[in-house]
Length: 144
Image (cartoon, rainbow, N blue to C red):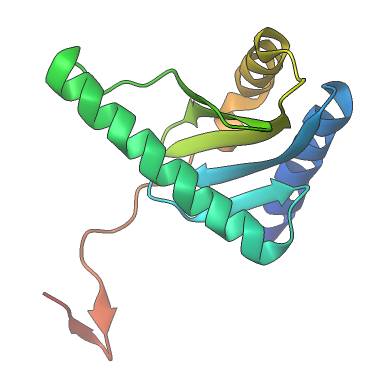
């Protein structure tokens, strides 16, 4: 697997934009790596998209930990949070990838979840994120 190129990131943003146009009351969406790096966004400015990606990554990680402890597996299908005036949906989107959507309170959660699943299923190979190298270098020297 290779990293997402800038052109693919543009295509992924287009996919997210299509989701927002297809499903009523979606405020914004992000595609992120499972460790929180933003890959694509729609409906957010850059700073908000990065914050939303970090938040989604944290919630997804907590759900994986809960699954490991109480379900015997760290596989997460979806995390849903109902806020005062919004709904938050976070779904596994492929190898090392997560899709997070923020919708208004009046959004139908069944429709949001279904359309997220459809999007993921239809383009899943393009959503995969290559694993990061475990060894990094700083000034040409391996870091510890």
